[in-house]
Length: 265
Image (cartoon, rainbow, N blue to C red; front, side, top):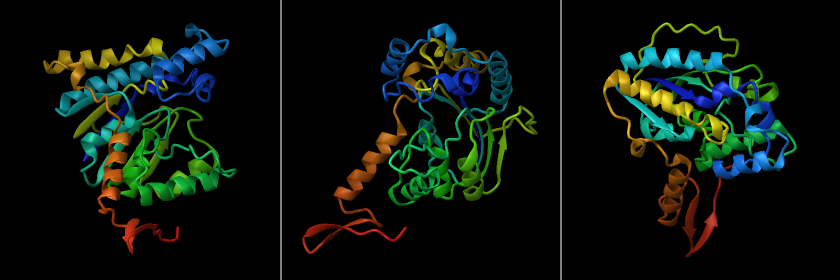
């Protein structure tokens, strides 16, 4: 299964460092309102790289000629609605972020321990979100290979090394040198990532949907976009399983009471 995943936040490299750690909120409307009202920056300060957008446009225009399975969504983990059940996935991910580790374990002083803990939680608790869906696929033994086309400094240090250690057949390209040997994909997914693309640039998603409509003749109805987060639906599945005593590796009733049993990590 050959999959192309395009995250529009890839084009935000000129300004990602400005907003990456500021005013984050799960609601993107709130996030950008808070950002512009609590910082010195204006909308015109958060620019995207037009050359990277042209690269994505050219790639997408060529790839859709060979693929009938093209989907659009808001959050990157929504891709799992379409590829969750696939095996042996050869993934090309074009993205500002690695999406292997979310790195949201702030209570650890060590980045290494944070990475290890998140990796364990993907394995034991099926933790999945827009920032680690590739790591989740890897833990599920569904990932055959990963090519990550990134930006300079998208990942550095221990995180870069840890990803290299846990994912086999992994390539990281951040200098624009990757040459596609084929534009044939079994699935293409384009996501906006509204948390990581400033609100004034959200319209870029329209270019991709309109390009697909013009080529395929298929109307892309916004009602068909993936607007639900796989993270929450999958979490609720697991909660339901736990309540119904179906979970196989963790919660089990013992002597009429609940007891948590966990293998040593």
